[in-house]
Structures are given as C-alpha cells and as structure tokens.
Length: 432
Image (cartoon, rainbow, N blue to C red):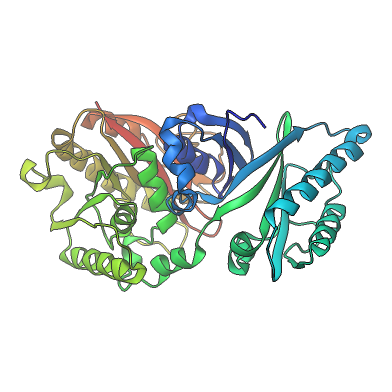
C-alpha cells in the first residue's frame, strides 16, 4: 500500500447515493479513492481529516449512512482470471499469517472472528471457505480458541459483529475487490445499534402525526449541509417537532435552535433533548434554544446573527395509511407549496448568502397514477405525462418555488423504505 496514503473503507447503508454524498461532504470528495458499490474508499492522510484518524469511532458515531469503517492494511493486485487465482489466494493467506501473528500476540481467551468480502461474488479470485479454515488454523497455532461468525459463505451481519464484540476482542477481516487492487482491512468502528435504538424508540415523546424521522437520517441531513467541520456550528430547525434533528445536532457538539408553531412540540423537543443528554451521560457542552413561532412569520429578533445551516424535515402533509389518489396528492402539494414559499421568503433575509437549507418533501408510492422522475432536479407537475420511475410521484416544480423565494436548488436525494406509502425527497438549497 502507498505509504503516503491512509486508506479507510466505509460500508454504505441502504441508500447508496445518499450515504456516499454524506461521506463526500464530511471527508471531501477529492479524497475519494474508489467507490465499489457497497464500499467507498477514502484517503484520510490529509490536513482536513487528521482528527478523524485519531477518533475513528467518533467519526463512525457521527455518520448516519455508514455501517462500519475499515482500516485498509494491505493491497494486492486484483487480477481475477483462473490462472492467477491460486497466486492471489496464496498472497492473502501469507498476509493473514503474518498479520495474525502480530495482531494476536500476547492475546488469550476465545477470539470472535469473521471474514467479510465485497465485490468478489462470481469471480475466480478467492476460495472463502478455504480462507476461513486457514485463518482458524493460524489462530489455533497461536493457542487461541476462535468462534467464527460466518455462516456459510455470506458476510456476517453488522449487528452480529457489533453484539459479539468482534472489533474489541477479535477481528472482522475485510477483503474488497477494487478496479485495480484487492484491499484488505480490519474493521475499526461499527454502528452502535443500541444507541440508535435508544434514541429512536425510547425517547419519552413521540408523535406519529408529525413524522418519525430516523436519527441516522437526521445525522445525514446535518452532515450534508455542514460538511467537514471540527468546530461547533449553529443549526436551526424551524419545524422541530419532537426534536430529532436538535438531538443529533447536540450529540455532534453543535448549537441547536428549534421552533415550531405548536407549543406541544416545543415541550416535546425540550423533554427529548434533556432525556438524551441524561441517558447518554455525555460530557459535551450542550446549548439549546427553543421558541414557539410560525416559520412563515419569522423576524430578525427570533434568530442569532449567524445561522450556519437550516436543517428540517418540515411538514410532509397529513398522516396517510392508504395509497393517496391524484386529488389527495394535488391538494397536499398545493398546501405545501404555499407553506414552503412563505417560510423560505421569511427566512431568506435572516441568513447569510450561500447558507444551505436542507428540507424534506413527500414522495408518494402509487400503483395507478402518472409517475414522475426526480432525476436532474424536481419533476414537472404530477398530472403531466412523464415516464414511469419506480412508481413514485415527487413534489411538482419545487425548484421553481425555491427560486421564487430566492434560493438555488443544489441537490436532491430520495430516502424511503419499500413498505412506506410516503417517502422523503431531501432537497438542498443555497441562499443566493
């Protein structure tokens, strides 16, 4: 491996494009070495990422779209033809022998162990079963008992790796086939699924009517607007609801300001943020400001002089338990068009030029209506004839609404689950 580079692999979550965009925002797009579907490899040996190398688990904890972080410790040629398969296998086994002898020196007890491979299916490069058996023999020769997490030839689930304490007690070895090299690395950090579950399901105040924004998505939204920053910034959510974005901003050591038209939501946000700080027993300084206000009526006295980013789920329309018809969608789109135009106009003079806003728009799954694609910008009005695109109807002509309010539409990402009726389009705006 090039000694001038410190390579780390990042396993991407379900929405690959969105997760990669978060990483590029935080780590710098210029530092992306290679993207291999599930894995993005970045070089962190640079000034802007020096602190991340020192605190890999902290970096992991702040990335909503990354499942685990892999430190690349070796690279070999990625030839995959049958003639060189044995040679490649031997090189990897030689590396495992050498690396394990150093890594597990003076270790004792039962060692949880697993091998995860990426982009290696349907190639002649590796015999995974042989590698697993070889690794077990090496551990046995070092007088170590091992417990394999692999079941068959499939990668172990990240939840199993986390729950077993493999990163702390053993090793999750990763073999990643790139375009020119095979990257070998060990997992250095993994999502803390217990903390995410705690924040998502155990917070004291929840409200189905205002939406259930996942904490991971809130993290992604914050990272997309702020990018690579090691200093506390000021985040404002004008539709704070139960305070999920505020909670995540505080955990990331930012200053959080939230407002909502409903007094109940202000109380919910306050209780949830106080609960989170107590539950996680964090030593960070937390600065939270909450006030009741209709976002369309914001004035200069409501906000501090400097807001670094506006991040909000906003209002997605009424709770739907059924697939909406065209009339229902058009009614919701008209109501939301008026809401967004007016609150964007209200906030424009209160934030600096080039300040980013990230908001969510509803995207409806439907089987019978005209479908509109969201490629290259927000689509035309949903009644207009358009090509079918994943049975989703997106918000009509939102870029025109944003432009009328004085904002440029930078990027749009989609987020949703198969079982959801209403998904989200994440829209990034810039004050111009």
